[in-house]
Length: 127
Image (cartoon, rainbow, N blue to C red; front, side):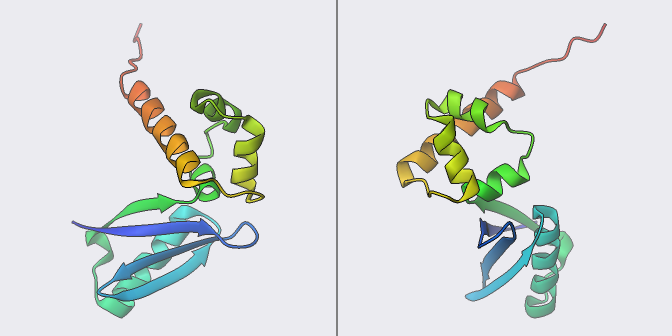
């Protein structure tokens, strides 16, 4: 399996744009959802680079909007609370009204990773 970095960002409205750099070629496309965008990029990799889509695994790099669109089960106010930041500010990042600094983006990312680790340790009691 080959891993390829897929950058996903919102450009303008609510449309997601994705890009990969493969063999020094920039491949881009847009879609309404992450799965749709992933499928389109895999098709382009096949068409232009002769890559079997079944052998590609993406490493995702999301902007804040795309991240919360992809993981729509995340509650912005709860993530903000765990990150120790103002929920209104995080909502502005998600809406695109403001862009987070590198430090703020890292803070959000670290919080999500910490929450994911906590979830991995959760066990369901079977009665």
